[in-house]
Length: 88
Image (cartoon, rainbow, N blue to C red; front, side, top):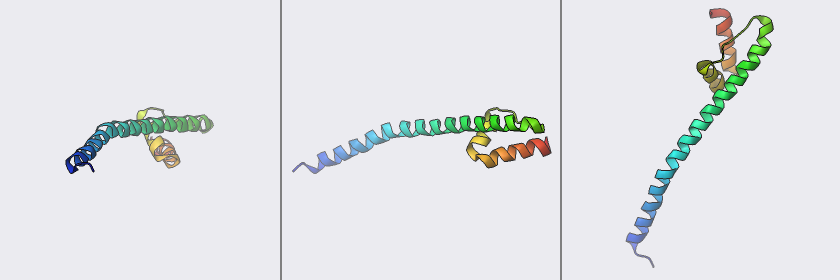
């Protein structure tokens, strides 16, 4: 049977490896999800601008509007179009 100090060292080593390599993977996954949502938001705004062109509606596509449309989804696109029509 292995000595307790070796078992504790082994478990501590596994935890250390997970902390060292798990954090960058989570960070990369988080960044990848954010970029994906930005692209989806830009696509939503492109579709809105294509359809809304006949009604005189144009929402500029930039980082801020893409982030709002991407992270909030369809309600975010609706909010941007309402802001563009009634406020600006």
